[in-house]
Image (tube, rainbow, N blue to C red):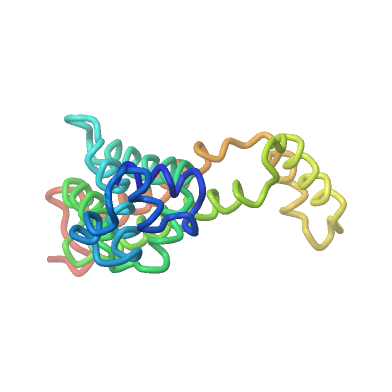
Amino acid sequence: MRAAIQILDTDGEGALTFRALAARLATGSGAIYWHVANKGELLAAATDDVIARVVTDVPSGADPRTAIRAIALGIFDASDAHPWVGRHLSLTPWLAAMPQIFEGIGGQLQALGVSEDAWFDSASALVNYILGVAGQNAANGRALVHGTDRTAFLGAVAEQWRRLDPARYPFVHRVAAQLADHDDREQFLAGIDLILAGLKTATPSPGTSGGDGT
């Protein structure tokens, strides 16, 4: 898996072949076919390996919100470091990596006291946000020419926003100043906190009755 991940990170998915991996490992292709049947399984196994390390790398004794933030940020950073991870998850969401993510997030939602009938919706909202933003961030990074100055690039985009008709885009004009200097990771975590805050308001405190008086 380490050798496959190195090839994926360095040269992309197109470069990951059984021949290339066999050469990297100084072995025959047959030895690899003993473990995985095809390239799809190899990509799935590499994705699972990256995600497994992220989901399990949670501070011991962390409270549920801290744990969710840690898992989310781990996936965000992993997608940035390994752009192929997010793409592979979106193409094949039934991978073992997805149940790992749901289990990691879902276990913390249980600890938060989220009612069982809201587990799937709550976990889905978090997971969809995490994968969506992480994948988009990775895609944005790949779209820019290597060595592009991020602040200068975003500053130019902000200037384009400021040139728009303020009568038609009043909100865009107001937030344009924040675009150039925003931190992607901090903004990502702010979104996680907003979702968690919503879950907190939707989760009854211990001992309180439901809306139907029960």
